[in-house]
Amino acid sequence: MSSRPTLVFDLDGTLVDTAPDLAAAMNAVLIEAGRHELSLDTVRHLVGRGARTLIARGFGATGTPAAADKMDDYVASFLAHYRENIETSEPFPHVPETLALLHREAALGVCTSKPQEFADILLKKLDLARFFGDVHGAGRTAHVKPDPRHYTDVVAALGGTPARSLMVGDSITDVELARAAGVPVILVSYGYTSVHARELSADAVVDDFREVRTLIRKLLP
Image 1 (cartoon, rainbow, N blue to C red):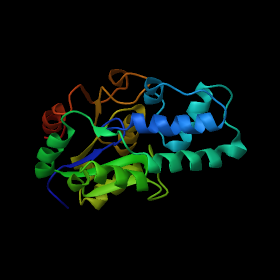
Image 2 (image 1 turned 90 degrees about the vertical axis):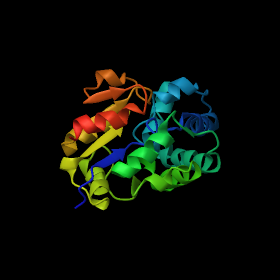
Image 3 (image 1 turned 135 degrees about the vertical axis):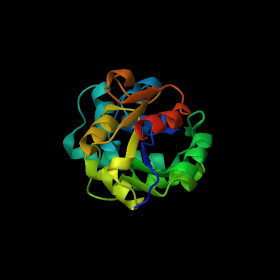
Image 4 (image 1 turned 180 degrees about the horizontal axis):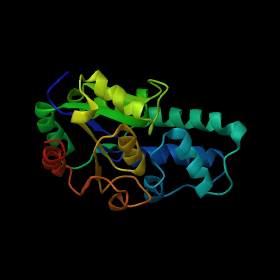
């Protein structure tokens, strides 16, 4: 096992501002279904548990729930639009340079509800993939957030142990994941959540991603 700490990051809302592209895909589906579009700010509060949940929340925000027998078609349409239109997603401020520093000090991984295909595409496109020794997205295994195995699989793949690891995320899903895995969790305050990060009982909350590096030393002495 590695003596270095293992740091596991959420992707959407934590490392990368993906909301504009997700909103565009969500609105494409809603328009196809005869619904009205959602604002970018609204979509920021709906992201967090994968495409199917996002679509269900989007339909709920624009009227009656999505018909169960059409949900697979809606998901397929959403993913097809998103696949062809990852255009405006960008790392949040100070993410690339902070990851470059952390990469020298720890083993880094990603644990996300984003489908594996899109997590890999996004990280490569934004030149962030080089920092991560392992990326676990939805569909790679049968486990999804907040099942702790989704987290512990990443830690194991990086040669670490949960006792020397922590989670960095932005939402209640990340808190639930960390608590289930028995590890500390840091939340960013600028992410995608309907309840402010400071109300989610994380071990720490940061407004600036650069603060993560200092907190890691406190939480994993």
